Image (cartoon, rainbow, N blue to C red; front, side, top):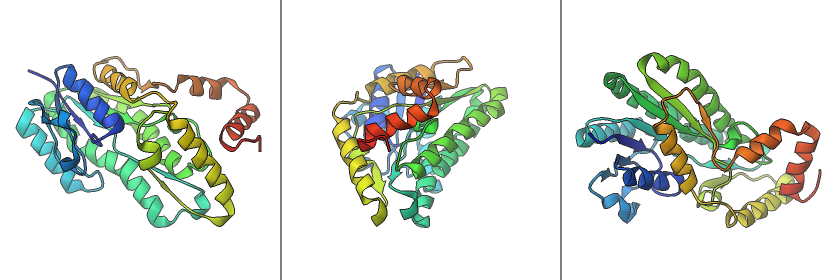
Length: 269
């Protein structure tokens, strides 16, 4: 029997690349997304379904899980990929913006896990794969809201693996570095505050200029597939992010901060 993966946010970027790779490897793919009518042609394959799933709607999560089970009978891996970045100065963040950021990146992830866990417990095995970021272990300017959610995902994942080990359910964290997707230009929202306008413009220019030089999402997809099949106790995988994490670990804090400021602002301030 073919294994089945359920992926959130599978309409583009890492989610789409992951769905295609699992399909190539012979898995059934439940490629969930908020707007299935916008799904690519690859989702018309026999072993693919596209349930509507909005991680901020518990009802759509429950229906998508049900549709996956009706079609394929099991869920061997859950890839929590849906998310976006709220960028900009914290002073300009409204309570509504921050709440939406956490609803999508954290609360939605938790809700999806909660709906899938009973399935995996009945099966006697499974893998929960949470797509975080190198931004879950280090931080960059004007991304405090986003980092807060990714650090939350890191913490809950590390704790969750202890809870689920007795049920033979693995927990894995994927920590991509910079990836060339539409995330920078279309997967981000920005806050505004007049006192930070110059910094915001510099970071936007840096981000937009960086995107074309980044690797595509295919490497992350391969890493997610590796994690889904890895029955060891390894928790973290960092495709395209190892160099940043190593520098952050070994460099003195003052030097690390100077490098980040120079890279993103064009100065050491």
